[in-house]
Image (tube, rainbow, N blue to C red; front, side, top):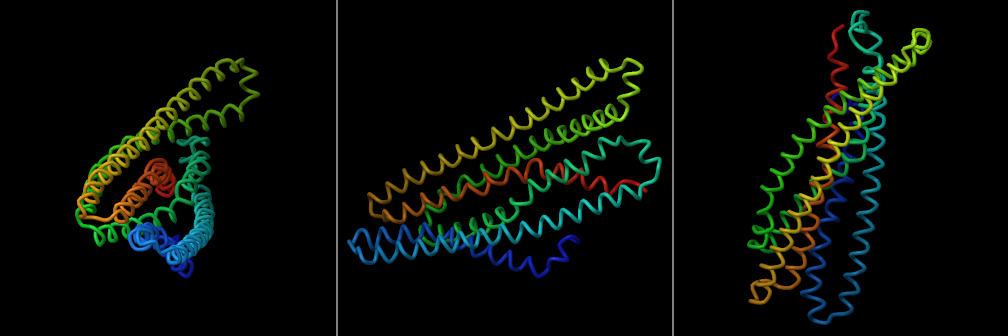
Amino acid sequence: MQYLRPYRQEIPKALALVTLGAITQSIGPFLIGWSIDHLIVQGNGQGLALMLGLLVCIYFLGLWAIRGQVLCTGLIMQRLLAQLRQDIFAKIQSLPMHFFDRSEAGDLMSRLLNDVSTVNQAFGLTVPQMLGNALSLLGIVIIMFSIHLKLALLSNLVIPLMILTTDFFARWARARFRITRQTIGELSAKLEEDLSSVREAQAFNRVPLNIAEFEDLNAANRNANVQAVAVTAAFLPSIDFLNTLATASVMAYGGYLAVTGAASVGVVTSFLLYVQQFFSPCANSQSVLYPGPVSLSGVRANFSAPR
C-alpha cells in the first residue's frame, strides 16, 4: 500500500471513471428489455428512435469512461512499477557479499526483469478492468433481482459452481506457474554463467557439455510453460460451459414464463444479455489469478532477502 500513497489524487479519479463505466455497462440491457416491452410491442417508432439515441450516448459515455480509466490506472501502474524496479535494484545493491555467493546472478536477473514484467502484464491493464467488472457485476445482480426474482435466482445458481471452478483452476495453475518461475530463473542463471565464462569453456573444451546442459534446462522450461498454458487453456472452456448452462436455463424457464404470461419478452431478453455479461469478469480474471501472484511473490522475495 505504500506504493499507492503518492497517487491519492489520481486514485479517486480512476475509481470515478471505473464506476461510470460499470453503470453504463449494466444499464444497457435493462433499457433494451424495457424498449421491447414498452416501445416495440406498442409500435412506438418515435420513442424507439429516441431510445436508440439514448443507448448510443450511454455506450459512447461508457467507452470514454473505459478509455479514461485505462489511461489513468495505466499511468499509476507504470509509475508504481518503475519505483518498484528502482527499489529492487537498490535492495540488491545493499545486500552483503555472502548473499551473492549463495545466489546465482541469472536468478536475480529473472526476478528483476521477468517477474516485474509479468506483474506489469498481469496487473497493469487488468486491475481497472477487474474493478470495472466487479462493480458492473454488482449492478447486474441488483438489477436482476429488481426485475424478476425467480429468473434472478435461476441465473445465480451457477455462481457457486463458478467460484469452485475458478478456485480449482487458480490453485492448479499457480503451482504450474511457480515451476515456470523456477525454470526460467535456472535458465537465466545458466545463460549468464555460460556467456560470462565462454573463453574458459572453450579453453577447457566444455562447450558441448554446456550446450547439453542448456538444452536440458531449456526443455524443462518449455515443458513447464506448456503445462501451465494447458491449465489456463482448460479454464475458459469451463467458464464457457457454465455460461452456456446458465443461458440455456434462462432461455428455457424464461420462455416458459413468457408463454404463461408470468414474464415479458423484454424481461427475458434483458436476462439473456445480463447472463452474457455475468461471466466476463471471471473469464478476464485469469491473468491476475495465475501468473500475477506467483511473480509478485518472486518480487517480494527480493525485499525479504537478508542483509
